[in-house]
Amino acid sequence: MKIGIIGVGNIGTIIAEALIHDHELVLVNRRTEKLKRFQNKAQIFSKIEEMPDVNILFFCVKPQDAISALKRIKVKSDLIISTVTGLKISAIKSYLNGDIVRIMPNIPISIGKGVVGITYSEEFPEDKKQTVKSLLSNFGVLVEIEEKHFAAVTALSGSGPAFIFVIIEALVDAGMKLGLSYDTSMELVIETIKGSAELLQKEGKHPGEFRHLVTSPGGTTIEGIYSLEREGLRGILMKMIIDTYKKALELQGDSHES
Image (tube, rainbow, N blue to C red):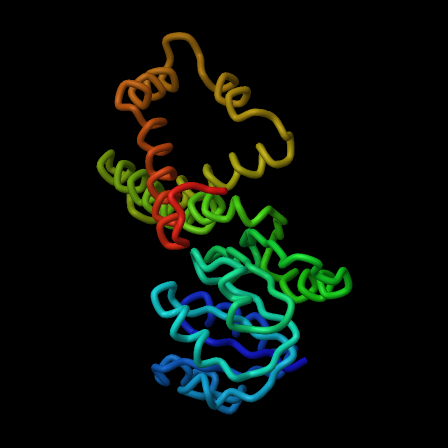
């Protein structure tokens, strides 16, 4: 299958790396140094206008470059998959013909552990849905949502890894403050987070149920939880997601989801 990718930045590169072994790739990026790793493995171009026709087209440019890029696309493709934050299917349709998919992947797709929010244009053929799902299956978990919720998905899972990394960094720093080495702190934090997440996933219970299992009266855990509540951690985290959500709405030209 011939697959084109316009915009080989962070996400575009990850997608290219995931697909290059099984498909013929055509890559376009205005900064050709980004394409050096794909030389002799894919067709590469610096100009959108030079791109040949493809079976599937991934559109992965930065939001601020999206409209100018769409205006320059001459390539024909029956299926367009967009990763562009804030770019609605209706906007893409005004420039391109073909069935359109909008996805919101996150960085862990690079190791097959990502989550991908996905929505389809109206009257999207069922056989093409299966093609898309098969193509993206190695990325991680696919979650089909209505397009009106895309800003929320962007805030929660699209930007989410960056927030998790900040939290991990803070916990590791705390471990080092207490005298642990960086390597020991990192291992303790990562394995604690990974194990806790897998336990929640396996048991399907509310997080509060497990929190109470390790919280003894007058013990260390309740002391830490009291500190979190006193400092307003829940409010800080919720505001972080809501502020990110508002920015995603701003990028797609909305003041609220409709």
